[in-house]
Each structure stands twice: as structure tokens, then as C-alpha cells.
Amino acid sequence: MRPLGSRLSLYSSHVFVRNGIYYYRTDIPSDIKHYFPVAEIKQSLKTKDSKNAKVVAVSLEYRLQQTFCMLRTGMLPDDLIKQVVADIIPRRRKAAVVRGKLLSEIVEQYVAEKESGWTYKTKLEVVGCLRLVVDVVGNVEPKEIIKQTVLDFRGKLMKLPANMYKIYPGKTVQAILDMSDVEPMSINSVNKHIMRLNALLSYAVTEGIITVNYAQGMMLSDKRRTDEMRKVYSVEDLKAIVNNLPIKQGRPERFWIPMIAMYSGMRLDEICQLYVEDVQQIDGVWCFNVNDEKDKKVKSASSKRVIPIHPVLLSCGFLEYMDVIKVHGDPRLWVNLYWRKEDGYGNAIGNWYRRFNREHVSKDEGKVFHSFRHTVTNSLKQVGVSETVISELVGHSTSGSMTMGRYGKRYQPKVLLDALVQLEYGIQVPRWISKEI
Image (cartoon, rainbow, N blue to C red; front, side, top):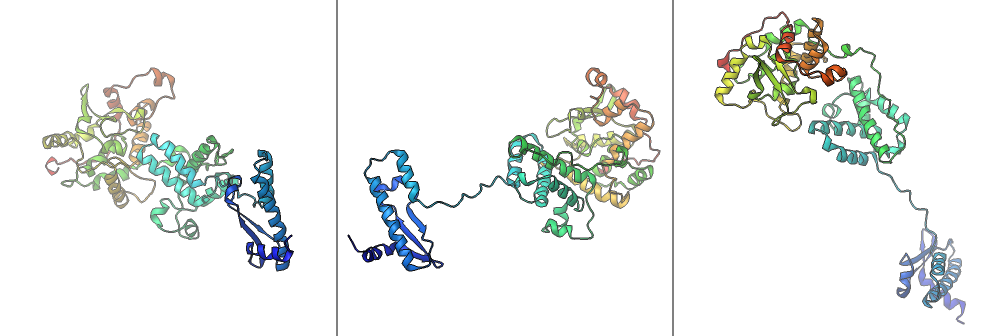
């Protein structure tokens, strides 16, 4: 038998030191590598003493060579092979906890699955909302979002501004929260973001990613009456609008679009996307036909409708304006407006009207282009026009009533016109000069 000293010398090449601790390392022989899940054996000898390290190394080497010999016989059954291999491979550290998908990854998955049912504008809104959700909540695993997380999220939203990324580009959420002169977003905006978080977590529940959606039922209650939430224009506001609308060559849309909204209650997009062929005479009544043909869109099925053209618009020279458009051969009413994937034809005129509105009409943030719609609805209500007629004029559903929703047909243009002519603001409206188109 070889003396112990010579064996120590032989095996010392497998021993090395790291941070003062001795380790043993050897390669698995190539002829039996297929039995092992690793290419080498590396194990701490758990000592800082060189003599002790060599003694332990000799013992380990002897056990390894014995195992290698047993494997080479080819006579061990599979279960015994697994056992002897497991006995000489150092116990591995506890496996790292497998990370679940982060919130940003769930957002990507959610958007990818749902976007086919959204308009492009809706997708932009959802992505924008969920970007803020991730920035405020943190890019955590959805299972970490508990009730307190949602409460904290809601509390921070109530201190953050609307259009945060536009107003404070490059600033973090915390930096904005630390500012003292921030105008917070409205309750409606806060609830919109909570609604988006709720939809995202509901999706995560459906997918089996989490078991509980703590955002459900967490929207803020708004104690204002419905009619208090929506600002209407006063008669003085309407006078200011009419008196300041530009009758400017080359920009007829800046006169006609606000006027049409004032006397019809149509949405901005509905007016901006009108084609010449959408101005029709039906049963002797001039009407706007709101539809989703060509590149047009409507908000809902009930938005497809016929709206009589108010006599005030006719007296202002609207049909003369139409004649000039036809002579020019333009297919659309407003040739200066261009279609965008995000928001159709309304972007440019919407931006102009915001500036015009604040400069000439009102500083009240609640009074916007959409206020025309509420003004029309409220004015007709105050003179006793029935709810179903108002709903049909502005494109709201009447499905709440089975009689009117299921069995009732659309009102004839003459009936709608009889209601619409009651829209009288008592203001002097200028006549359009057709040669200035």
C-alpha cells in the first residue's frame, strides 16, 4: 500500500483555497459522465487548516474512486445508480424562488389579448392609464397587490395631476408627489385609473395569476348630482361664442362646427367627419346623417341617427356654404381637417377650440366643447321635450324602456324638427358670407 504521505502529495492537486477555506475539485471521468448531472465534483472541505484539508481530501477521493469503479462495472440497477451518484454530489443550495410575471408583463399580455376589440384611441388611453398604474404601484408581482396597495395607489392619484407625463416629462412619480403646487386630477380621472387597474386585475384573476382582485369596489364616490358634474354654457357664454367666432377666409370649420354643435348637440367627432353626402333632405327636412360609412366612426349603435338641421343654421347660410363646397368638388365638409388614426378628424379643431374657449368664453375647466351637447340636452329638457326624443337627437340609447327600445321605431325627421326648433337661445347669430370660403 502506498504511504499516506505519497497519497497526500498525489491528491493535493485537487485541493485549493478560496477566502481562506479549503475546497476539493475533480472532473467526472469521461467514460461515466453520462451518469452525472454535473461535469465536476466541487465541495468545501470546511476547514482553514491545510493538514486537515488534505486528510479530508484523501477520504473524499477514496470514496469517489470507489463509486467510479462501481459505476464502471455496469451491473448496478438504475435506482441504485441514482442513489450512489446522489451520495457523492454535494447538496445544492436551495433553488432560487421562481419569480412570477411582473405587473408590466401582465399589462403587455393584457393589451395584446384585448386590443383587437379596442379602437386605436382606446388603446392609447388604456396603455397610458396602465403606464401610470405601474409607475405608481411599482413593477411588482400582481400577487403583492393587496387592499392597502390599492388604497395607497388611490391616495397618490388624488395628489397627481392629469396629463402628468406631458406636464412634467422626465420627473418621477415621487418627485411630483413632493411638489407643493400641483393641481390634482379630478375625481373622474382618479376613478378612470382605478377602473383600469380593476380591469387588469380581473384579467389576472381569470388567467389564474392571482386569486383576489383588491381593486374591485375601490372607486371614489362622487357626491355631486349627475347634472352638477356636467357644465352647460350659459346664455352669456353662448353670446360670447357667437360674437367671437371667426368668419375667416380659408377656415370655415371654425365658424360652422361650433354653430352646428350649439344647435344640434352632435359630438365633435360626428361633425368633423361629415361628408357632403351626409347632408340630406329626408321627407322635405334637411338633415345630418350620422353613420359609420367610409372612414367615419360612431360611439355606439344608437349614435347612428338622423338629426334635422336647425332653422338657425339654415338662416346663417349653411346651404349656401354647401353649394360652394359642391362647386369645388370637395367630398367632405371640412377640407382643412385631416384624419388621424388616434382621433379621426377632430384633433386640429379640438385644439383650436380649447384655446378659443379659454380666451373668449370661460376660464371654467368644466366648460368645454362637449358642453354644447349638455347645453342642448338641458335646454330641450327645460321646455318639456320628451326624454326619448332628446335621446334620439343626441344619440343615446332608449333601451331602458322595453316599449320604446324594442318595439318603438325611430322618430320621423318632422317630429324631431318640431322638438329641435324649441331650441331657442335668444341670441343674434351672424350670417355666413359664402364668398369668404
